[in-house]
Image (cartoon, rainbow, N blue to C red; front, side, top):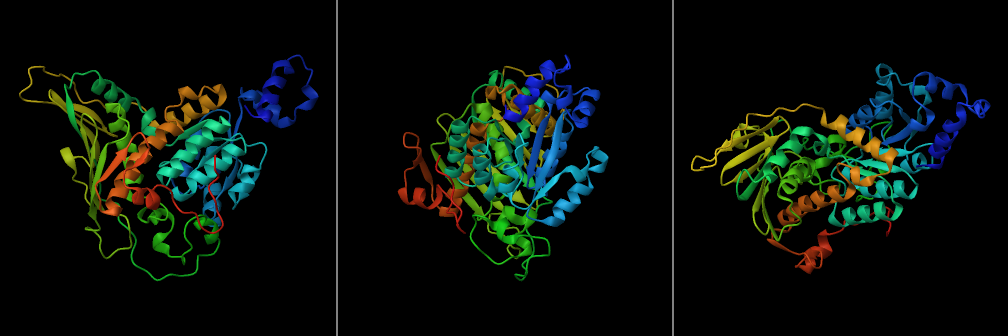
Length: 443
């Protein structure tokens, strides 16, 4: 608990006796009149609010006592747009401090927790600095843009003992949890293969366009941050950052960390023994991208294989679904995605499984943010639905697949050393190189 919140909590204990009535301003009285004690208030700052970061903010603002007090984005146009949307949420935009440098936001003393919704290449640096500044953190997925960054993030959480939730909100959605319980019940029989797929027909890279000056209101140098210095190009910016290795890892790290996470969770799997990734720019060779728009990756574990299959520009994926996880057992196959889950019986099985289609019953993002807020208040980090450790685990597996694809090699993982057996691969890919004077803190 921050010193500010500790003071409010202690003050509220004797407020009823009138001892500190004069110490509270009108805002505090208004809070009490609304039935929310000062000790239950949580002030948040949001860093990166163009896409998922703003969805996270809106989920947080649904929770009584959560106050948005500061926002930070390198695009002034985005800040203006988002603050204009706060009226229907009953938030006074004039009271919110605005920043274009996250370090200034982290210096704001009354902020208890931050939401990080920046492009992936910023996640590690901001999360570590936030922990250093004494803030709790909700960080979007994938938590790190390299295996090395993931490790530093875990170390920072442990050193500073802060609450850090990874934004893999499916971990908080009940039907996903129920499906994993069924997988682990043994009713499917021996599971030898888990298929994970992501076919996204609406996703495609931007066009090939000329480099240009950044639009007015954008601090492009701050957007690049630790990434390699390059001229501004609109097809590398905002949503399209996903398709460039400097900033992200394509569909594998964008959707993959959500879906691979449940494959690993259902199988109680650690890290694979070997990885082979094959694919390329097959769908959109004339558009601007570096990451593969088509990728198939085989992960070998001790007792099962996991297959990742992704394609941009196609919706018709396995089992007539555009995304999902299939746990294929001797007695049946459980198919799970955001739309629900069901079991398809194996015709030869003598153990019949009667399980009707199970639909979602809740909002996963809202539940995930509520879980984060609850733990920020309780300080019981074991209650987090997706700790930084869990986020780092699946991000590591996703990065392994991308590294195999990029290197063109079948990779072997040495669990005792925590590294690939190929030292050249370790040197080239385990940690992202930082540029422009930025350094990832050694924790």
